[in-house]
Amino acid sequence: MGKILTKKKLISVAKAINNDERIDADIVNPFLDFKFQESSRFSQMMIKSAAALSFFFASVLVIFPEVRDYLIEVLPSNFELSDRIAKALDFVWGLVGKPVKKTHLMYHMPNIIIYAFGVAGVRQLWKKLNKNNWKDQVKDAQDKLGKMALEGIGRYNFAQGFSLLFVGDGDQIARGLVIDDPMLGATIADRRLHYTNLWGKYTSSEGEEEIYRVLELYNSKDAGEYVLFPVMDEHLFLPGPYDFDTAPHRVDIAVQRIRAYENEKGLENKRLIIVGDREQKSNFVTASKSGRIISQDDEISLRTIAEKYDNITVVDPTDTTLMKIISIADGRQILFRSSDHGVEKYSGEFYRRLSLLGYQPTKEENLTVGYDISDLETEHQVVSQKQSVYLPIILSRDIFDGLVKSHLREDSYIFVPHLIKAELQKLVAEQ
Image (cartoon, rainbow, N blue to C red; front, side, top):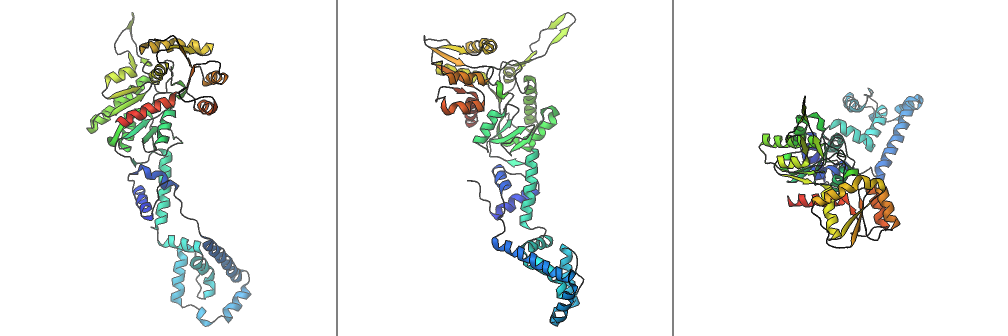
């Protein structure tokens, strides 16, 4: 159930927005979604009646002047207004339209009906007379907040210890985190994401000032951690050397700028979590006329970044997935099954990374792990059910949702985004 917004709360939030002050993050969606009640049936009937009566009197005054003259003649003398009262009415009509400039009440009747008896007219007249009407303030603030949310420039207060999620194309995991807990923190991206209004626009190519701006905008001094996602959804597990959303050297620059901002503001170095493959590298080469000059600074990876800066945690989807496989295997021989192209691309790296984790089988039984160029091939292997002990590794949300309905039972698969999301939730909870 959403927040119930009282008149007092609506006015308070509207005032803060119109004064460019921060508002609580949990009020953003309820405030944007708030709608005033529509007019009642009685009000609508009044509007229609007022319109009809006004049209009648206007017709009499303009189209049928003989009727007008007759009515003016037969009506009592008190329908003739004094100059003072006529001028007072003309002042009111001047606020919402044109003065009548007549003293007989007959000429004022259309305006009187619309603005005195017609609910819409009263509303319009009230707005003209009272420009600080609270409903208008709320509507103006809704428009302003909606524009800020669209452009990623809103100023929000989150609970102490919130997360700042720097998201690129690897936003499947971040999306899941935010959907599970909308108040987890602010999503920082270079484009608007459909699943949250609590986001800030940040373009990494625009330099140091841009990241300083977004960290200031989102009150990062109260944050608990930063989470960077230099990954791609379709390459979470066993990515190639260049299958990333953000290259390692760009991640290094981002971390360097965050730490510089903290140092400049006198803040402690907050935990910085990087979701990405620790084996991917950016390489820089120094060469002389006689050839390459080897340097320890030639290679930049998430591993070197974690060694270079304080309080860095790398969440490697490949390592996390392999550790899950090892847990499920429980000492069994691990076999790798894929299409012929998939085996050529992945099997060597699969066993190399497995060996780095020190896995040694202790049983004769086998566990077959399935992973392929795309999840479509893995889907076929699951549906065909030709492998008795088959553990599919799935990245695609659509493929997973289709398979889990009828072909997958609990603990018979690894859906990598869920696995990494659970790991991140654990890390954030620890913080």
